[in-house]
Length: 512
Ligand code: BG6
Image (cartoon, rainbow, N blue to C red):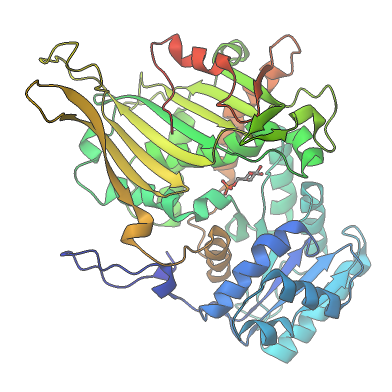
C-alpha cells in the first residue's frame, strides 16, 4: 500500500483524511499516455497527475508524453492539460511545460520511431532514467496494436540497466473469454505479466479497499461471515445517469460486460474471499481467484433462469422528461442491449454453500449507489409475537461503497413505551465524518501504484479470465432473441422481473 497516513489514536477519532496523507515519491519516469486527446485523459488522468504533483509524488524527474491521432502540437496538448485541471496548485504549470505530444496512427511505425526519439530527449532533459509507464487509454481495439508496436520498437525493454517499462491497460479486457485471451496474448507478447497493470477503477476506491480492513482487521465480523449466519448477499451498483454520449460504445458492451464482469466481480471477490496470509499483491489476488473459481459457472439454461436483463424506456425524474435507451444518441432504435442486469449467483465452497448472491446493476435508476448488503438469518425463535415484531427485519450489514461511503448495521431495538414493540434501526459509520478531508480519486491512487510498481490493486490475467468464464454463458443465453428483454421506465428500480427473481425464494431487494 503506497499511501502512508498518520498514527491512529486508539482512544479517539483523530485520524487524518487523505488530504493529510503523505505519498511515497515515484521514481524518475516518463508516463506515456496513448489516447491523450480523449475524454479519459482530460477527465481522470490529468487531474490525477496534478494531484500527485501536489502531493509531491512526482516532481522534476517526471513528465508526460501524450500520443493520439488528433493533430495537436506540444503547445496544444499543454493548453488542454492546463484547462483540464482548473485551480491546480503552483506545481502544475512547470510540470505541464515539460509535456510532449506526438500525433500519429497506432499502426504506423513512424509514430513509434518518433516516440522513441522523444523518450530519449526526455531522459536527457529531465533525468527520467529510461523508466516508462505506458498507459493505454485508447479505444480497446488499439490495445494489442500499441503493445505490439512498443515491443517491435524495443520500448518494452529499456536500454538503461535496472530501468522498467510497465504497461497500464484500461478496461474492457476483451468482450468474452476468447477475446480476453487473444488480448492477453497480444499484451504478453511484448510485456511480462508482472509488468502489465490492468485497471479496474473500483479497486482504487477507498471503500472497496476498506472491505479488507473491515473483514480482516476486526475480530467481530469474521466469525459470522459465512453460511451459518448469512442468509443472502445483495450487491447493487446503481447509476442515475443514462448512457450519456457513449451510446456507440455501450451498444456493444451492455451492463453485463460494462459493470458485472469487472467491477461487480471485484467487489464480490473481496467480500467473499478467504483471509489472505498477508496484504500483498500475490496473496490478495490468489484469494480473489480462488473465490472466483468457486462461483458456479451456470449452464446456458441456468443462465436463462437465474438472470434478468432490462432496458430503460422514457421516464420522468424530478419533473424532467428523460429519453428511453433506444432514443439515445448512437443507439439502434430496436436495440436489445441491456442497461440493467439482475443475477443470482452461487458460490460452491465450505463458507458460502447455499447462500445466494444477488447482483443488480443498471443505468437510469432512481439514484447512484453502490453497496454490498449481507442479510443475516432470522432469529430461530421470536418470543415477542407477530404484532409486536411487525416492523422488525433480520439484521443487515451494509457496506456503502458510494456515495456517502460507510457501513451500517441494521438491528432490532425496542420502541420506547409499555408494550414490547420492536423495530429495526441502523447504526451508522460515515467515512466523511471519521476521516474528514478531500477524498483521493481512485485514478490518483492507481496511477501512483503503477509508477511505484505495486500491483496489489490491479487485475491479474487469471482473474479476468475467471470472471469471463462466469459471464460468458449468460452472454450466450442472451444471444437467443427468445430470451426476454424486460423494460423499465427511467428513474425506477428496474424491471418487475428482477423482483420476481428474489420473490421466488421469498426474498426481496433491499431499498438502498
Ligand atoms: C465504468 C463504466 O467502468 O464505470 C461506466 O464503463 C460507469 O458505464 C462507470 O458509468 C461507473 O463508475 P463509478 O465510479 O461512477 O461508479
